[in-house]
Image (cartoon, rainbow, N blue to C red):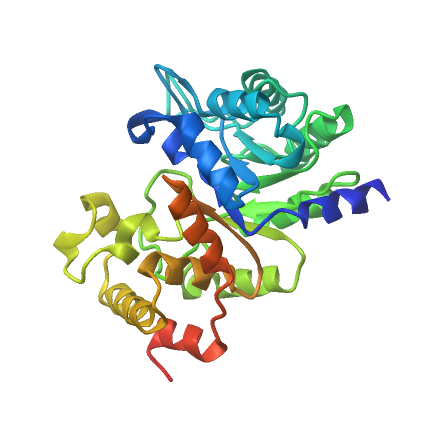
Length: 317
């Protein structure tokens, strides 16, 4: 019964999740509290963070947790934490281990100033570590009450489903790969996964036949879907490297045409495409204002017919 209740609780995860990008590093907004106020006021109730999201001035976990506490909204929002990601001094060294799970959860709770996380994700994987050991570590945290539920980010389908099989108390309820209208052609960062493209069609179909929450990141494909047609108009060289192809440019053109005909923005078409996927999709959107957050929520209410999705993908009517 306890196992089932956890799976039901994660089904309450909203479609739009506010991303962490505006809360740390070079993309940190001038007034994080004001942004979070506006995003929350727009109707967003789930917030993504991660232990590795930090800068010299602070951490995303700390800024998010301090805001939730100061506004008295901790019980009405969902806080998502992540751990086991490489970090300084050696960004190439794996930090995926049973011991790191306990350490990273504890550090996240301390930074956020809370006694539990609504959802915690492995931020990376290490295939040399047996899945069963990681499952046991995550289940221990659930038993301790430090996390309500757990899942994985950037794990292969094989490792994720093996984890589901090996768990006997608290199964992983979410997976978090990259997904968007356009195919990811190269990794933007080492160790990330995508479910775009023909190679992952079977994986998407299996997810569609399940109740798994698929927390998709980079629905705009690093800005590719909002750039002009010419490759040099993309936001940066990395975006071009990861997403630029004739097929992807054609898809981008069609999405912009649909935005014009629908009277909405290209961003909203991109988000709607992900949100209306056959699987249980959630979209991490890094809104930088309340207006952007509201537009993201509106996008998830757009209905795309199967014919429109097929046209966006292949140009077929």
